[in-house]
Length: 452
View 1 (cartoon, one colour):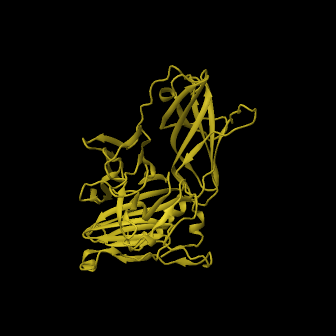
View 2 (cartoon, rainbow, N blue to C red):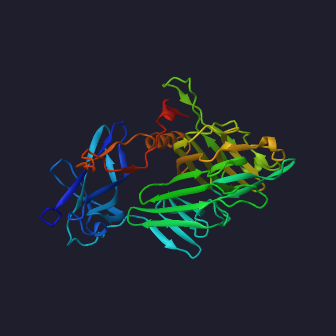
View 3 (cartoon, one colour):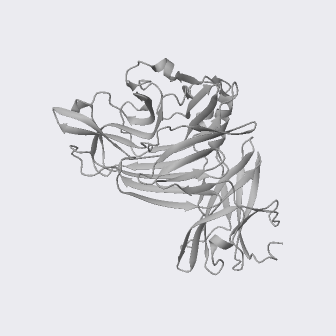
């Protein structure tokens, strides 16, 4: 039927699910390079169809095309879609192109992007999140919880200020009289942004150089590249960041994936441990730290946990288990790489300052910032790169921990994807079409049977 309607060319995508859990609504993005004789306008004419067999197309599914480039008789473009891959099976999808008379795709999913003056608001079924236009950082975060009779909104950032993001505490002053000065991604500085918007996702990319505070003797601040991916049918935001130091830089502290929230928004800070010598049949015990105002009132500012949690935790969660507002935000670590081993007191930290908390992954942390001997020199070329997922969900008594861990286990299960026919490289050898999914690489964090 589709061939009769005018689509002449196809690339077949094979997504393999080796696990025992059905993978539904999995985000898959394929980069194709084809002859410019095969496609005229990818954004208009490309379609994606499910293929129950190699030579059978069944129904069309919504897709989104981006990154179109035409050079040297070739057209390069990205195609994104959501696929269902049953357990222990391989699903086939056909990317169809080569129909210059095709009408634009009409079907849309539940993803809305609105201009709100000083911010861009992204709305899907799980959250409302604003992106500050001046800084490119998240702000005004609201979670949605579906209840009987309607939807409840939980304002997770009552003060509408941008999230601090990656933060560096530089060394300021002379050798015998030093102090620490913070530079944050949320500080107003030149930011280059790029956006892609469509029926499947909203992608926001930003690049900036962190500003150097007054009194800091460093030639150039680190470069930060951030990509936030908001999907139409998933309750999480996928964030990928790379921070690269261009020159030797003395610092007191470095906060990555830094998230700020106000006292009273959550009642617990929870975390999923990994015990290396546990048997695979063992069950891990989820840790909880009470952060409700009635328990922390009067405590001094500073680190709440004194750095006893490992840097690369599988996930940490913020819970509100008050009877009137049961909601959670879980941050799953999907990938983590560092170009060298520089670090000091590396751990996952939670800080309290007045009526606010900040949670961060910190490869470097110094408590005393009045002594130059506590500085760490980050060599030029040092780079940290990581991927995390901010996942929003209601709190469900008794079952929440198991469900939260199941999400992390699924998100960190590999999803091999192949695209055929494979391209022929200039040297005559077979190449591969690049593929991106949100699947993480932290499978080893989930070796034990579960949590409680």
